[in-house]
Image (cartoon, rainbow, N blue to C red):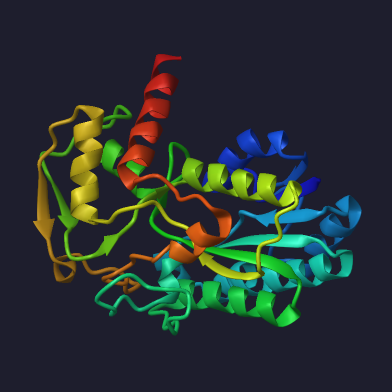
Length: 295
């Protein structure tokens, strides 16, 4: 199995670089070798490597910036996946693409299932939804994996921001942090996503043939941003006070869904495993950061 990983230096891509070589022959690209805003660059890379599987771990993820930079977000999150899908169809390759809880508006009282009607609140969610649509319309072999609240030991994410504010990385610690407590989701670590992807591909390599389509793939359990922040500090041995606030006290350019919890029972039925609880992913991520500090 030859795997082309697009976006090797991102949060998820960095972790995929560690686990995919055990599944097949891995080739990878970054911004220097593939310009996601240039369809010709995407097509050229795929035609050069002729993979059996394309894993698209690249995305425009600056949610607030996307509100004033819509063309860039749409180029990377909407147009580029469509080009990948077209090239995958020509090769008979499988395209694995990561999407997001932000395709929903967060108004549902319980967990979202794949059949729920998307209603993105902002440019980022709309761009990701359009990417999903382009892939389905092209009709290549595809697995669209919606995940949520992605974080990890590398890159820009909520966990690293909280640790920075608490002085973990050497910055002056803040006296207290005020964190939104009325948005709920399932924090899913980049390593969890990478491990699950590798496990899925191992099954496919062994002969499994999952149905094309959309699957919700998140950590088990749910928590608010405030609860997640408190868990981060407890796990890191920090005593920074966290004050719970409503979304109305923390306005942002992009509106976030109040409920980002995704039902992942279809994923479990299809692939015969589930991702661990979000707390386990947090413990693993903090252990990685501790190891890096020691080294």
